[in-house]
Image 1 (cartoon, rainbow, N blue to C red):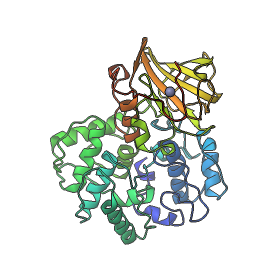
Image 2 (cartoon, rainbow, N blue to C red):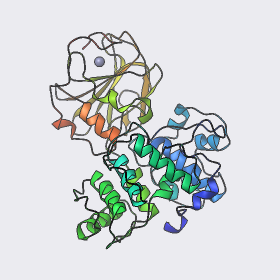
Image 3 (cartoon, rainbow, N blue to C red):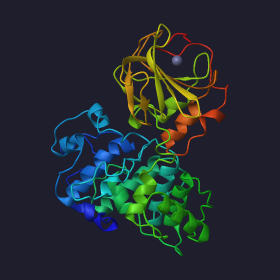
Image 4 (cartoon, protein in one colour):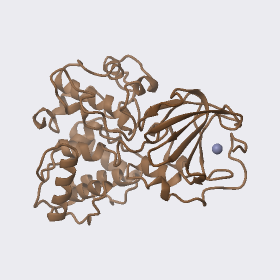
Length: 393
Ligand SMILES: [Zn+2]
């Protein structure tokens, strides 16, 4: 398997493909920002180009490869490759049984983002001699450093760290190593709960965390961190298979996920009618259709936590069906007691509404979300109505 992974630099043969799938070059459309959902298509395409053929690509990726337009719904139709969900084994396999394509996609990291993915990029750039601060905030200095790196690598200097830039940025590491790239590695391992000191020393604790990660992700034994391990780390979502954002990552900026709700713990996410909404957890669907919620769904997980979605224009998941995280459950709208299109989302344990904001922010940032049952029951409401919605239960 490792032998089938294009080494960093091998992607040079895919130069015509713009890093980040920018629309202005080659007619390609970027399927989605950051989410493994889009990324499966993106990584599949990059891998296919590196392999010199498009056989076995999902239809959306194949369409992208040929320059044919496609939309996000088409990408969603690829199936379980949704935000926060690791692609099922073999989902992107070629006929040769190559499992490379089951790796999660490299995320797109760019201006305005913050968190461990940004910090990882900053440490890797520092390892290349940049003197930027590793503060986890993607500002002007980080963008300029990314652009310098891209120019030096012969990449499109768009300042967006996508598959090509990631592949060029990461460096192989192993026990005994040290320096800024090791801090990047430790930052990634901590996303998965390793609780390492980010000291840049690849000692026993870091080695143990790498071994654990490799074993858990079927990457074989050992402490080596090669391009495959880097991609699994950076592209993976902690808790993958457990939770997913209810909307594609690129649909809303981070700041929309910390907004208070107007009257009780919940959140209103402002997206236009027809936006795909995804199951945040695995569970059993109850169809909702009443004057308050309009068309919606409740998803009850194995622990009894209820994830509720309201104001759909169309429900996709049928009542009584079971869904997996990231599965399409409906399209947003403004049915029920709503004065404008948005997704009303709430989390309940028993009859208690909990504040979903920290849960959603963690998923947005790619870190392990808190157990829904531990979410606060107050502190996320505000007086007055959020634009686009009137009070409802
Ligand atoms: Zn609401």
